[in-house]
Amino acid sequence: MATSNPRRKLRQDGTVAWQARYRDPDGRQRAKEFTKKVDAERFLATTRADMARGDWINPAALGATRTNDRGPELPVVGRHLSPGRE
Image 1: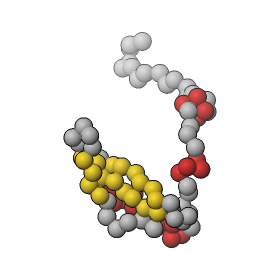
Image 2: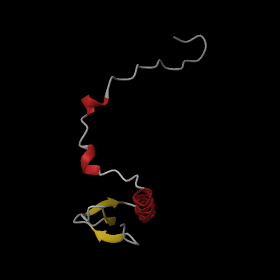
Image 3: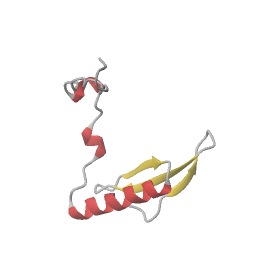
């Protein structure tokens, strides 16, 4: 289950991060860092709701996606030019 509040964490470079820590359904502790506290709170709320509904997806099961594996590139769209200009 997700913890109630994100934790403030001081990074080595002096910046502040907000760590959202939670336990997955298997009991493993997981964490994700955010630059804004509100983003960490939203993540925890969403994670709690997903677990309660049974919709939570293990992020480790998704695996890493390389840029080349995403699919075909989108076609290049031409620029919008004013009338009379090419």
